[in-house]
Image (cartoon, rainbow, N blue to C red):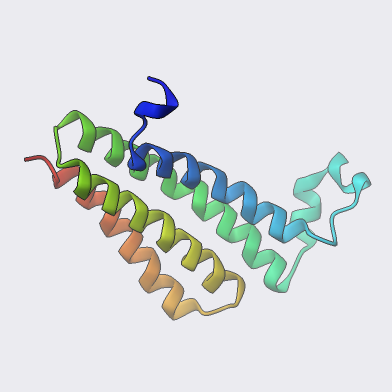
Length: 130
């Protein structure tokens, strides 16, 4: 499959896979020094406040990926309407961006609501077959 044949949903898979790394970059910006790369997990364990929350958002991003990835692939395999698959996948990525922002800003109740919506989108992908 060439890049010209990738659906929007498949591009969203790539975006969802990159988001945890972007979140790690946010956590490290201005505080992670070259010497910290010797033991990055120890550095992460010492963080507090918004940096710790960004690290937690990164972990959550990796945790949610398998279900989303499986949902996108299954939706394509089951012959779901491409417009619906694309809309759900794009919704997931946008919800993840909002989730990361809410997590970093310590908006726990809203963050949890957005997380549930993201989970619902991932599950909905399994049911878009025609």
